[in-house]
Length: 279
Ligand code: DHB
Ligand code: FE
Image (cartoon, rainbow, N blue to C red):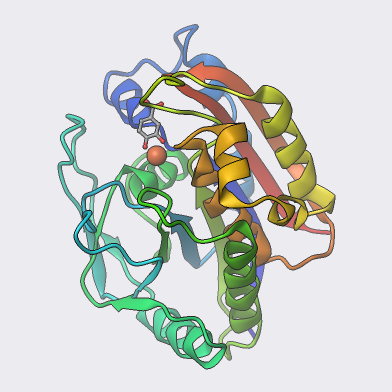
C-alpha cells in the first residue's frame, strides 16, 4: 500500500520567488525564512518521496471569480505554471501522478465529497513556490497531485470540512495498492491580510497555537467557524485551511515535529515552515 511519509507546510508569499530569482536568500531580511529549507531538503533527499500531494489555493490564475470550486482535484498528465502578474519567471511543468489522482477522485466522490475534477489545470505561486523551495533546480523528482481549496471567495469551506477532506485523502492514499511514498504539502498562511482597514494584520499568538495544534491536537482549529478564523488570522491568513486539510492526511493521532520556523514578516505575512512525520 502507498505510504504518507510526512507533511511539509510552508508560506507561499510571491516575494519568495522574487528573492530566489535575485539570489537574495542570504540577505538579513530573507535569511530567517530560507534557513528553514536546508534541513528540510536534507530530510526530503533522505526520504525520497515519489509523489507530492499539494493542498493549496488558487489566486485567480486557473479559477476566477466567475467559477470557483470549493474543492478541486487535479487529474492531468501535466501542470503548467504561467505568469500571474508577479513578474516571476514561470517554473518548469510538473508531471501529474494520474493514477493517484483518479484513485483520489473516485475515493472522495464515493465518500460524498462533491469535488471538481480537473483534467487541465494551471498552477500558481501557491503550488510552485513550495516545490521550488524543496527542489531549487526545478528537476522535479516527484509526480504531483494538486488539491485546490477555495480560500479566496466567500462562502469558504469550513475548517471542519477541510479537515474531513484531508482525512479522506489520507484514507484513500493508505488504501491505494501501490508502493509509492507520498509527501503531502500544505501551503499559504500564516496570519496575513492584504487589503482593507486591517491590511497588515498579523496574530502571532493564534499562529503559534495553530502550529502547536498541528503536532498533537490537529482538529483544534475545527472548533472555529470561518468568520472567527478570519478575525484571528486575516482574510488571507485563512489559507491555513490548506495546512489543516493537509494535516488531516496523517489522521487525528499526534505527529512528530522535525522542523518549525516562524518569522515576521515576509512581505505582509507571518511566514512559517513546519515538517511533521507520523509519530
Ligand atoms: C502575499 C501573501 C500571499 O499568500 C499571497 O498569495 C500574495 C501575497 C504577501 O504577503 O505579499
Ligand atoms: Fe496566498
